[in-house]
Length: 116
Image (cartoon, rainbow, N blue to C red; front, side, top):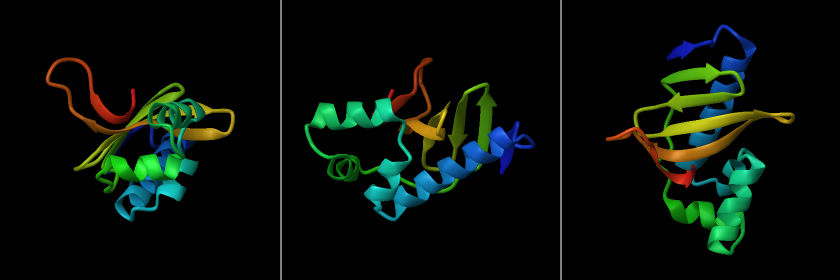
């Protein structure tokens, strides 16, 4: 794994949260994945689909996988794996997933199944 700022506790923690999220997605453990979402992302998911996080998240078909690289910029991070890119935000409660199921951009914007 390549990690910009992984020597810092922020990089290690962001990597850990992204890894747990991707593992939960791969194992179809929507409950564990929902626990790792940023509050805003969870609210958008539940509001947009008008259902509980676990049911809605399971229906997205997130690819899961492992973290290969993490980049941290202050309170934001991007974790990239072979099958998924996850964006994270650091809150008072720690790192949380802000977007997932993101594919590399053809232009300048990632296309994400979850979050923005």
